[in-house]
Length: 519
Image (cartoon, rainbow, N blue to C red):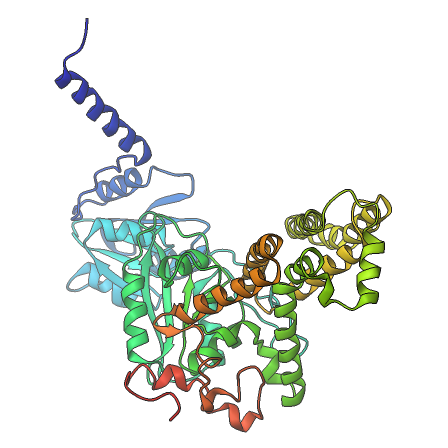
């Protein structure tokens, strides 16, 4: 028997509702106001978070007070020593006669913890308990005390893993937001340093902090980043890089519009010069913005070296960036389309090395490039000691084996290895990854159009960079057009007495859009 159109529509609506309910389970309904009974409040709290194994509920007595009391906290994310010594012990040993409000007496005289707040909203209390706080209920009281006891085991402060320096501080961020903010404060004891807190993650309820120096940052940049942070709609944040992707100007660009760092000295330096930093609880990385093109080759160690040495290192990184982007594509264009532009001896050498090769030049270089990319990925994913062995020995063995087997010519192995080394001269891993993606595009274009394709691809890249912005700041700023005041900390690093006047483009340019850049 055929079903009516109405029945089919109702069934379809029912399936869609079931699908939505399956992907978003219904949360238990929690009453907003507290009860004046301790047992009811503890039961409500227990049911709201599913009575997990790490939830601790305890009834206690307070000295001469003949009223039922109870506390609730989650073990593992709370400081149990503080709970035992500064809450439970002080409450049980208090023998004073209470006058006035019992809850107020407990708050002012019996709890030896600096952070104590009085609340009557159960939903807010549940979120604070999930954040590592302890809640105290008292019989016949419709308010509760939330006590700051967040803690638990944390990773010790270690040397940054992704930003190694020969000369400079050895401490890096950890997964605790409070510890990270303290490290920034120790590096920058400025009364104008601000930490603006947000809550991100509709389910994870993670803390996010916007860090900036109030009298230094451009108000327009600050207003823009606050607007973008308040628009975040994510259920769970695994790393600050997700925040980057949400608030960046162009999600289609291969280039990072914020730079990640796990160095507190880097964050302190950048916010002092007009930038902002975003930190998220649970990740040891911070995202810094706005970013311009010249920033991708800067390292904190540049400011710890003599200016001549630092300038030479920056120039070396720029050359390495050009090699990482263009060398394989240039080789393909020259060999396939324009061999007459190369020296005769080099042409004969390349032809001799390619004699008997089963693949074309583009197939060879793509094969070797893909092999080295897989080696790099394997070296990252494997344990550290094994990964280093795979990265070094694997590259040598595979390169030698490919040449011996006649699969790849020696010059292809040299170009691939040199390109891989050059790509890792960048101080930032996100920049190296971007170069790898762009490099493959250049290689394919040169395989089709030769040197003219490379020139066209370069022009497209220049147009993209000039149109790209990072929080309203042109990505190409300080390169084209050049800002005179910022040239001392651009491709080169000038004497330290000249670097103090840097980042003019972050301070004045956006405040007065009609101002001429060559002033």
